[in-house]
Every structure is written in C-alpha cells, then in structure tokens.
Length: 605
Image (cartoon, rainbow, N blue to C red; front, side, top):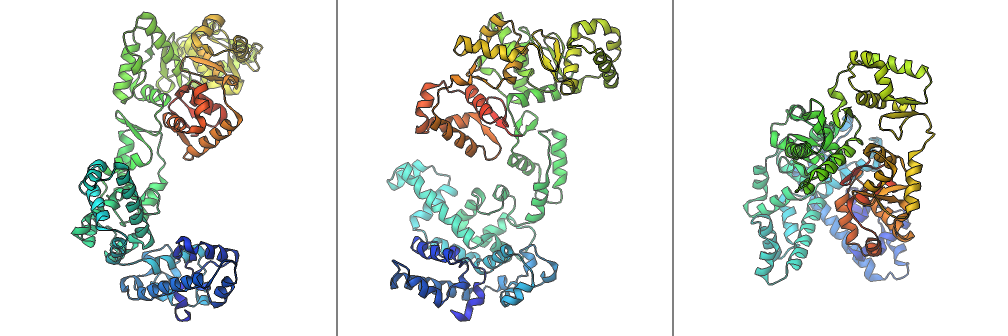
C-alpha cells in the first residue's frame, strides 16, 4: 500500500467504493473526516474493525478493493499518451505550470503540490482525470464485460436499426415494458462507464489533441462493430457540461471551451428575426462546422420556438399578439364582428399558432362580436398595444407623435389639479393642438396618456371607458366587483357581470387584474379565491409541486395539469374543482405573484 500512495492523492473514496456493501465503511470515513484513498491506512482499518457489526469479512472486502484500486492505478502508468499529456491541454490552469505533464504532476510530493497554490476542487479534478481516464479500447472492453450478447444486440437494434420496443420484445418473447426496462438499465451502464473512465478526455488524447474531431474519426476509434456506441453518444447526455450533448453530433471535443464561452455569453432578444439569426451565424463563424442548420439547433437549445418566420422564447398568446402587432401590422387594425375571422386566420397562418381556432365554427353575428370582444380583452392586457379609435388597435412603436409637446400638455393639465382625466372633454378642448402633434382621436389621447403617465400620476381606470382618475380612487371598482361576486355567492359569467354592473371589457379585465381575491375558473367565468375547495394538506403539496416543477423559471400549464391528474393525492381536489388551464394558471398566479403569463405558459421573466 505504501509504495503507490502518491497515486491516490485527492482520489475520493466514494468514487471507488460505490457498491452498497461499502456503505457502512463510507459512513465511518465521513464521521472520521476521511475523504481520500490516500488517507486509508492500517490504523484506520483497525479502528473500523472495532465498530459494532464489523467483522473480518468486511475488512477483507475493503483490503481486496484497495488492492484492485492500486493495481488499476499502477497500470495507469503505462497509458503513455495520457501520462505525457501536458496539463494545459486538459485543464484551465495557471501559466506557471502549464508545461507540466500529467506524469510530472503525479510525482510531486504533497509539499510540492501545496506550493502550486491550486484549489482543492481542481486538484480533485486533475487526479480524477489522470487516474481514471482509460484508452478507448479499454473503456469499451470494461463496458462490454457488463453486458450479455443479448443486451448488446438490443442496443444495436434500438440505436442502429431503429426497431421499436414491441418488435424487439416480440422477437425475445418478452413484453414491451420489460424490453424498455432492459434498455434503460443498459443505457445507464453505458453512461456510467463513459463518465467514470472519461471517454471525452480519451477521445481528445487519442486524436492527438486536435481542435476538431469529426464523427468519422470517432467511428474509426471505436471500430465498425462498435458504431452502436457512437450512436449512443449522439443521442444521450453523457458529459457534465450543460447543453454539451445537444451539440454532440456537431462536435465532440473540438474547441468546446471557446464555443461555450460564446454560447453562455449570448444575450438575445425575446423575438428573433432573420437579422438576429444572421448575426448569430456571424458570431459562430470561426467554427467551420457550424452552418445554418446548426444555428437553428443552438436557437432551439436556448428555448426558442419557431412561429412563422420568427423565433419566440415564450409563446403564450400575449407574446404571439405582441409579435403580430410589432412585426406584421403597420396601420391601425379594427377588430369587430366583420373582421375577426380574417384577423384570427391571419395571426394563426403567419405565426403558426392556434389562437381561438377551436371557436371558429359557424358563428352568428353575436358570436362573432363576442369573439372580437374577447380578442380586445387580450389586447387590453398587453403593454404597448394602444387604441387609436373605437375598437381599433396598433402598437405604440408604429405611431409618430411629438412626445415632448405631449409632456408639456400633460404638465399644463396637471397644474389645474384635476381629480380625473376626462379624455373626451380634454380632446374637444385641445383638438387642434393635439392633432398638430400627431394625436387624432380622444381614444388615442386616452391610450397615450395612460401609457406614458400611469406610474407618474398613479392613474386608474374609472367606470367610464375613457376617464382616468388621479391618485386614490373615490370609487373603487375592484371592491365593487369583489362585493358583487361575494353577494351572489358563486362563480359568475363575465357577460353576466358586465350586464349587471355596466362594465366594459377593458374595465372588467382591469378590475380582475388589480384584485387579490378574484381568479378565473374558466375562460369566461370568475369567482373569489374562497370558492376553491382545497384542504390544507393539498395546498401544501400543490405549492411544493409548483416550486419543484418550475425550477427553470417557467411552468407549462397543460403539462402541469397532466402531472397533477396522475397524482393520487390530488384526486379529491380534481373531483371537487373544475380543473382547466384557465383555473390552474390563475391559481398559480395567486399563489406565486412573481409568475406572469397566460393560460398556457407562466414565467418569472
């Protein structure tokens, strides 16, 4: 043991004793602050032998395992390509010792290593790579020792021949599920072996440290009979670097660090046009193997989805409508029962979406008008979409008006200390002046005044459609709506509320958005949060599952609903409440106000 201790510096015990029979020994080492193989000596083993339940058999197993480790490490000295490889070719290190080889480094005494002033994590990494990286042929040999011929044939049929689980199972006389279990186990073994013996490092070393390694070269290194393993590499994540495997069919070890430095520094807008895609292609121009199809793959990995000729990072209805009005609409668009079908078809066709597609059946005039009102309701929630006339909308970036003169007019109005802004009356008074600066209707004045000065003046919508109150409202529409729903004691249709209270669609939506007690129970119904039937335990579980499901900062509502429907603990909650994407999205926004979005996707961004 003593003669090769220097080979064991910074090798973690847990990495070499993964079998369950060593669990008790691992716990013992942890309690005694013993972390590395080099710290295991006779004194430690004697102390372990005095533990309850530890007999000579356990000590013998540990000695045997240590002998295997030491023999393996001794053989590592003969992997000359690795031992003679310079540290700088495998690690980011100080230039003071970049020219050192792996062999030089491993022969340092502990005091010499300390003088190098290297972090413990880097030391562990260097020793792990140096002492566990095996030649490719050795890795494949150790891998296939774990498999029967049938296991290998199954992987070949899946990876090379693209056979289905049913076909393979039928051939072997076993069920599809049993075939799937065998496949999963086999893939896990491959993954673990490739990780343990650092296949990616071996490939780089055996390909003479080239910057770029083609798939053809990888196939040559594996040999024709092992092509199924190359196919596995292309399809499965085996390397630790995030996203690395997503580009595995493009490259394996070629210029990976410089590639990822660029990849992780990308700061792209929410909407990608042809110009942004072209610029992205120029960014990766130095990598000769990256062409436009690889650029699309990078875009996809970054979370964008293609809609028509645009790529969107998030694709809820608000994002789709915003893109439509920013990129496709240059003049004000009127939305009514006569234009609604053409508008929806235009949105869905140009942006490859399905907005209201399920509702475009045989609608009468009233149905078409209701559909148009619903679209107007969506637009009222999108910042930057303004009205230029009755039922007519455009994005603020598409209109030209003199903002400086508009600010002067605002200042003059505020000097009079009004309690509210009556857009119709003010426009009639200042019509000539407002038209001179590009504001041609009272609707346009109302929308621009609200858009530009809402935060500064604490503006709120009033009962009248084009009146804004300044500061705290004397009349509180939110309280009125909450009280009305509470008095009725049940979930109500929005149309019923509008008829009884005389609210416009915009006024109703504003009141719902500003309330902390009202949520949607369906697309056309709302109610109080108290109407939800849920136990305390169910609520705790739901919050935990939401947090767990939303680790990446967004929640796909349809997928989350599918998840809870399959979970037995939500059986009563589902039975007692009408579960749909509008209800769940609204409830999540209530529980976690930091999430924004519509009924399909919520995001913290």
